[in-house]
Image (cartoon, rainbow, N blue to C red; front, top):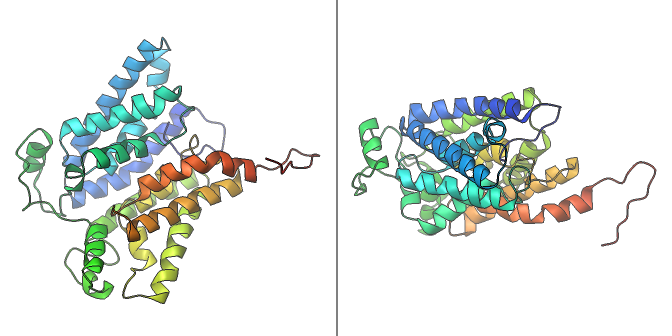
Length: 333
């Protein structure tokens, strides 16, 4: 189950439908800036997720239509499609969905039982298993829809001329080649504060996230914790050495930061449960993601950061759970 934190009594289906609706501004911005290939991947991921969910439920002898209808598998599918490059082969999207639905969700008991975020587990598995395919991102306005379809459905992948590095990868490569931030940002790959075109996609996810906050579907602690964690860490290093570290706005407007802030760290199953715990959990994701982006081997470390903080959730919950009224909190073990 990958969905934002529920703050009021509501059916799972209603919450999931609200999350899908909130994703639409970001998807629309993606289609506008990069192309409609993402819609094809969303459709592939949705069909694969529903088929995998139905098969596993049948094997486990669980109610089929009630679980399929709750929308949780579709939310997982959409999140997977949105974090993968939009021109990956169709089979990679299917494999990622199978890892999420079968491996990260149902092997732990199904909805509500999984300790790791299924979409992020699938992303990490794919980037480790298929690093070359996972690095093939289409540039803004660089690949027409027919070419995207050709690549998705098995066309030749000799595409060096029609793919480009992401803003995060370009920044990391430039800094490691001893260039400075100002010079790197003067490249045509960048817009106002982040990657050209990708700023609009981040803005779309921000709009959707604010919609979820307004509907009280997610808790404000989680997006705030993530944004402060990543932004404050980036800001300290940027103030100390602005030529060597990009600004907080660059990090927040690049990669999957806004998607993570409002749609990933807000998973109620794999995140912390107390208000303070949510802040700690989300801030930890933001800080670790910045460290991986800056010093690690991957341009965008959000998925790995989420999984690392998922491991810490039991400890965070134990340390931050308030004592029952009238009792003293036990601080032992």
